[in-house]
Amino acid sequence: MPPPAVTTVRARTLFTPLDAGGRAETVARRLSQAITLGLLLDGERLPAENHLAGQFGVSPITLREALATLRTMGLVETRRGRRGGSFVRAPDDTQPAHLERPLRLLSLHELRDIGDHRAAVAGAAAKLAAERALGSDLATLREYTARLPVASTLTDRRRADARIHIEIAAVAQSPRLTQEEMDLWSEVGDLVWLPVTNDEVHAVISEHDALVDAIESQQPERARQIAEQHVLAETERLLNLRLALAAR
Image (cartoon, rainbow, N blue to C red):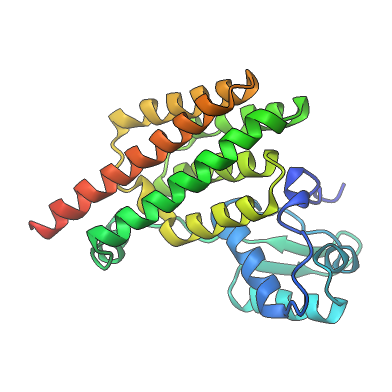
């Protein structure tokens, strides 16, 4: 049997139509974001070109240009034949030592500002998710929270973390909040998990479980508070690491 194509809640958000005048570069950026963030998994087959072009609201020619860009970036592989198609090639894991330089390039003010933005978006998405989530959405959230405890590398943990928050925005039925989450996670990338020690992983897992519990029990304000506090705790860890690097 051919590998399954993308069919989950992601189709409601990742492949939503572009604004008028959308170009191949925009399609490529959205797909590369999804691949880098782990929303599209290594080896996963993208929908057929005509179908995917229709979901984005672009012509098949524009879609093919975007896929060509992704192939040159090493993020997509196209196979011919009956079981062919375009398949995701996830990038290699980022090594922690390679992340210290980009962190040093961010000022404390910039880190705080990014953290405030992330907290506002995550809080709003969690609140709306608690008001709008369907039963099937909750099952999806539980599935993704279960991935974090078994993630072992920094990149895998970041991908699992990002996936949870982006799915919450999708459950909130807000394409704009979902895109905001994707943009912000693309900006901070693996930096979020750089200062997290193995002893702190369990606490982060518990925060996600509590967040989904609040969404499932339809407590919008509690969900918002948990999401905001969770992101602000991540920001504080990053700020402390940035100060420690500056002191070296």
